[in-house]
Length: 256
Image 1 (cartoon, rainbow, N blue to C red):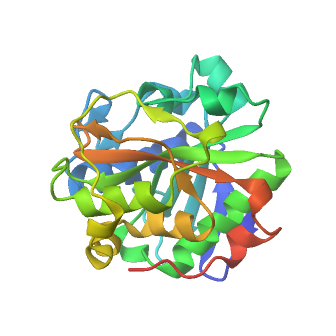
Image 2: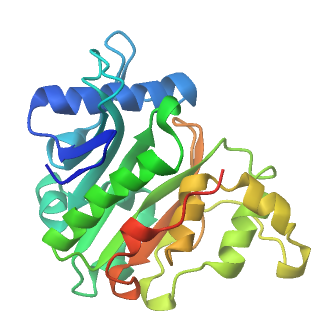
């Protein structure tokens, strides 16, 4: 067990049953709620899976006050892939969407965050903070230098997301030596900085992305439109050395 809170318990998956519970939650959020689909979706068993699950660590958040037999109480998940996991899997998951060579050529200890989600009944500061406390312990244990991974905007309408995407590229672009780039050549034209509607941009930016930005996160260049999952993805990059020792556990409450 990595971390406890009065309502929540955070631990790594230790069994196939634990991983199945994570995959059921992922189905509820990514498929049933957000309309995603793909070859790893099992509608009969209500599971969202892919080939990387077998190689990664899975960080699980359980709500002790709302036990759910089908998900074994799991209300939040992170899939965690370190360099060793990626070597066994053949690559990092997000390398399909972004060229990760700026990160991988720097002798850095990397941790890819993926498939992160929280059940609708538990969204808000407390659940996310409990999950981040467990993540902070994991980062310290494995001496991670850089956290990275794809983060998603719901939908694939680039016009609707133009303010938000342009705002990220105007103010939160990763330094050049760490700037990964999208593998998708798209027609997403960025607005000039003086034409960005900042209020609309922040309104349309998901709370999880805003939380990473408040911690000092940056993004890679470009976006990847994932039609199967009905998302537009950016690559978030967070350098641990730029955080204070307990920044992950003391981050401000995420914005709605």
